[in-house]
Length: 191
Image 1 (cartoon, one colour):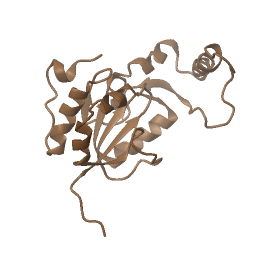
Image 2 (cartoon, rainbow, N blue to C red):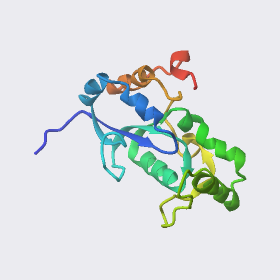
Image 3 (cartoon, rainbow, N blue to C red):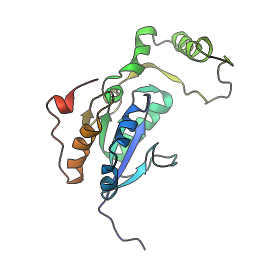
């Protein structure tokens, strides 16, 4: 029998974004060892190969905008299963670069097909073709949305990406059961 733990159940999620926020998270370097003493990482693209988002997560950092059906499904699921959802980085907070598609697309099926044509055929170096097997490319949503337009968000952590110092300043108080002070340029600057 395993002894009970007081560790937070911690997750990170990567939706439509570049993974820069996760790379910045890894820039926490040695502090990651201290963090590991206080959290159990139960889901993350950088720490595990778990495919299903677990139940009863205490804190989840969500990187990226909601751009396709898979992003939407995961966002809805993690909101149901997570006590505190943190919009992690400018793509999650505002839509940022992934939402540039909204300027080019009317949101209709023809516009979404044009986006795929541009990505997989026009800009391909070699082997220009649309993926053939169903489900390989999730269906694009009519518009790319920031996370808070899809689910309630508890905390916003802007930055492109947020610096390791800002990430630590947001997470460290949570380990003590406190909310971080999200004010001032050091914590709220975009870009």
